[in-house]
Length: 254
Image (cartoon, rainbow, N blue to C red; front, side, top):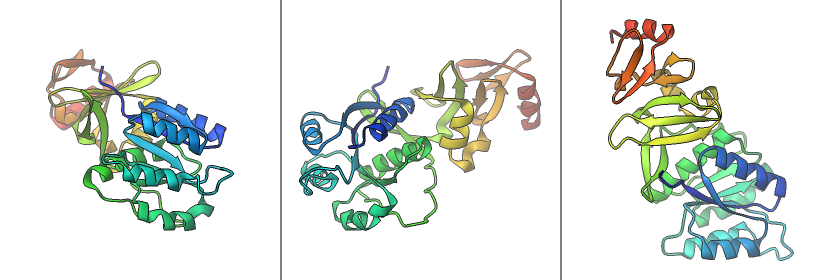
């Protein structure tokens, strides 16, 4: 199995940190450490090599200089430091504007939901790869659009996948498995329902590209290679052909 994208969470509020960790793990990431203080965060960042760091700006330290901005500065000084995303509240926006000199790869306004977290992390990896810092958020600004790509780790390397390259979405007991339709074929598991993945994580403009084949499977027609009364074939995979699939495939002429 391919390794997961790794995250270090720096957040001094235990409940928020716990919820972030659970959400990240549900989304298929690996949380290497959850740090509640500047000292613990500095120790973790000196010994671990995360792919992304989530940094709360205000850490409630007795020393006001021991905050997320100071940790961000340390990451910026590393030759190949990981991208970092600032966590903040709406009343911290003035602080964030001052922090733009640190060139973060993203910002998240607390409280954070899973879809926003997923999108921010994927965009942060992309911004870091392109060396483009994220613009600071504005009050009452609309939520950023979900990117049409996402990143996974394959063989220890972070690889960019386009949503249009996903051939199938398959619901399991607790997870939805995304499978690519191009070689080498990859799979990516997200905890949750098919409805959640389709409505929250897949970009709005691409949701219509997936056809419901059965109760627990959606397929991208671009990768359907054939069908009969029993199954729909998608490369080497086959899926039960439900009545919905028969009608939709007939309309597509496949």
